[in-house]
Length: 402
Image (cartoon, rainbow, N blue to C red; front, side, top):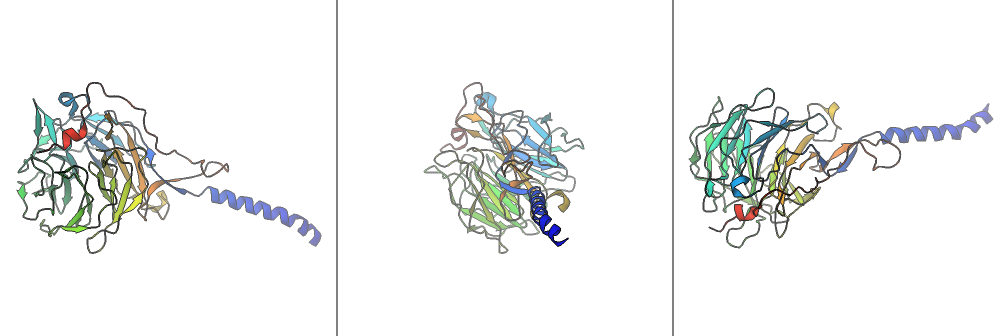
């Protein structure tokens, strides 16, 4: 009997080892990078993006074809699937005014768009605000005008906090450092806009904003006199009455950039792509600290291809740990459209933000052939689709010299 056991012991050990390997290979593996999703119907840059009730929205923007045809009022939406992919995009109620370089936010069951620019026998800078009710189907009711801002703002940033909507910086003929706000009433209507006494430390235009708890972070932007991007970052605290603490500078980004996409996910602030001596694919991340300042910026997974003017949105954390690995933060960051070298993009890309602030996705090996055999696939850029007509330079449109 002892000799028989000795004979079969090596075979059993090999079997257990192989089974262990099989079990290990079926565990989700973190893959840094981005995944592609169903592309937009309309190529667009300088659009707005929000997520509400499990749907992703792309709003307005510029699609090329010359200024007269370039500004769009179309709005499209898609459902977000449990695995992060999206359903086919569908059109819904168009904006009242075609506009690009707007900002969009959602609250109280509505989507709001603020500012931007349009074309009516010439470029027109907008101070107008529109809202639409989000229907149970994900479609939108008709857009309606709300109280207008105190000044036109092309490419401002917009933040909702403590039932106030803030419009920050932008361009009205001058590069702005001003901040104004309007109360969001219980019925979703807006109170009158009013300028705040607390101004930014510098003018900010085609910049970005992230909102973490009671803190607002403003990142980068265009340098008015010499061109190029800013690396400076500033922050403020939002108080319960809607007032702001004085703005303070914090850690600068590694790369100056403008026309980047900036958004917060959990405690992390991301700035993605943009332009600085060329189109950028790099992504940076900083962490909001308890005192309101930011940690040093660090590199995150780069975009599949360089771009500027893309719209970013972040969904809520996944509802239960059973639907995600235990060490994943579970928020998904989506990036829509954008432009590069005269090409207007339909790209939709997404990545999960894990608890370390890394961007990537969880994948499961589908065979023992090696770690590259995963369910799903990384993002791949769409083939170039030239836009009919004479495309104008985006920076010529958004960064004029006053």
